[in-house]
Length: 289
Image (cartoon, rainbow, N blue to C red; front, side):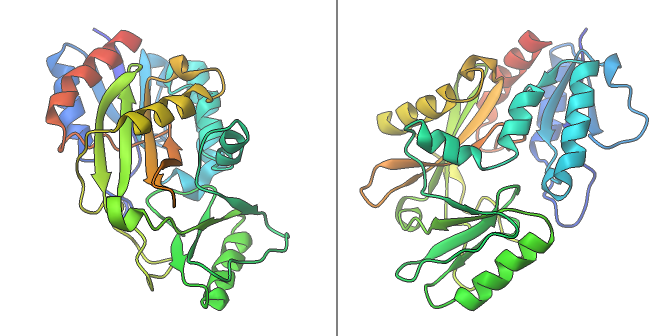
């Protein structure tokens, strides 16, 4: 009977509830595993007592990235951590998008502005500003070309808190075909979903957003699946090391998919939308344990 820790975070008003958790606990227990949901920063946890620590909903990590990574290092030495700690470290800093773009993966064009660096902002199109360490659209906002004063204020606020800023064009295809999330588990496509735009005009960067508006089942196109597999193939060490992954895609101006983000640390699985996927998730987790 494997002992499995489903790693989460402590409840707080500005963090979403993990609706996958009770489904996974019940499904894993039904398959014979001993399961415990544990906050990553809970004191006194003996991680070596688990056969597997599966990161699921550590959705407060971006507030305390270095502390979270220190925990991941320690946990990875005490037991099997999934995904592996070096993948977690790489994926918690969205500068990985620059690495993937350099490797030829079609991505959303991104400029990075570290604290102390000068910068300019687009003057002829809408743009997005967000941090390189973030989750749930925290500290993300959409701006019109004439809203530079507010955007600069956001960048300075993030710099004051130690964040590197990302500046991207607003991908207008999101308003037409939404953002698609292709989820992989155990090395295979698990399911796909589509959601509507998260960033609305005029919504402040420090205002809480609905992370997955209008979520619905999606059948990925051949081009979307090919791009997802190409991006995952560029992950350090190879895609075969990943137990789970979510690949977020949007359309470029040419209508072709672009990589918005790779979620390799704590992606929501949307099991309420895809209840049939729980069985395959359990099979993959037990194979790792």
